[in-house]
Image 1 (cartoon, rainbow, N blue to C red):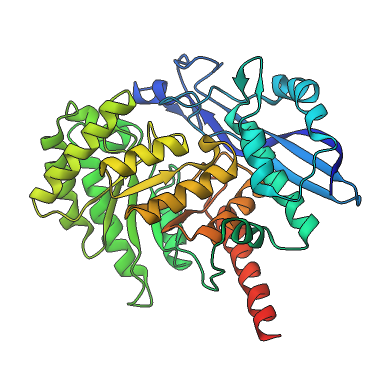
Image 2 (image 1 turned 180 degrees about the vertical axis):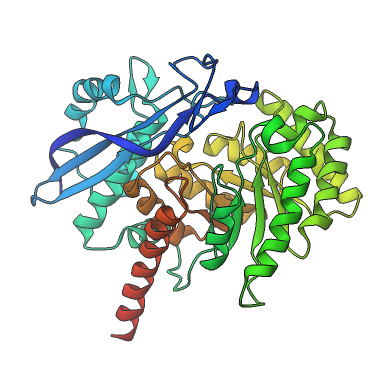
Length: 415
């Protein structure tokens, strides 16, 4: 089956683009916005609304396959592609991508995704957000052509077993890190709360005291609210390198601080994402590895999650092969085409490192549902609830897509 026509539509993402450099350097919040000048190239202000572009593929049978181009909240940071703005992207795609899509046979998702992920215009690859959205549309198209669910297409093309079991979901709180925890406990999310600790004065504390108090509160709150004693979520907190900032990226001091959080987190396992940012990949791998080694020497069970400077499937392989972390966030929009996310998750699992299929709050319902199907096929250890920072909305989109898929599988098995 071939593509007959292509339509691009501007849209809104479920959150905002934030200038991480400006926020780390102390940009103050005024209500929901931030004060001060932007620091990252392309940003007009520290916080601006997130944009998306829908790619709609009209197939020969008249059905429409869809995918949404979306970029991460902290675009342009830690080696990521620059800000993604629909107004400038759509004319470019109409001119440079449409002629190559019309007439393209979409029956093999893997072949199509690989081809367009490597596609170049004037010697440059397409923006990761474009490759991400296009791959979702190509997966949708292949599922239509084959009469399958999207995850079944992936299982068939990668030779993966179809598993009839739910995934472990991870809720993100945004700045509403107290009330959101109550919501997450009520809905018994498997890992929580993300926390968004991206600022030292207001969220971490000059010596880490504010985060320490929060971890203590978090553990107690879960124990107070849970009605089922068997509900035992993992605590996963993203600190965006701020711990390294207050301890001058000294691995020993960072490890000592993280170990001090462990007793506060008890009886729950503690995962710390992005404890430090060394400014470039090689140094980042070395620093995370040293922190992890020192934690193990202390007998600490705190788990290190890699994020910054791990933006491609090749980056994931490097982080895994060095053993510098316990878990890798596979940030789906940064990897471009969804087939890279699939390969990255499978590589982590094959090499003994936990795979966290993440992404960003700044996505859409379409991209979140497509990612859920990739996860249903590859079975990562943790899947981000997205889009948005309200938790409930993202939980509805991801969890319901998962349960619908499982129900269909069970019905077929029974038949």
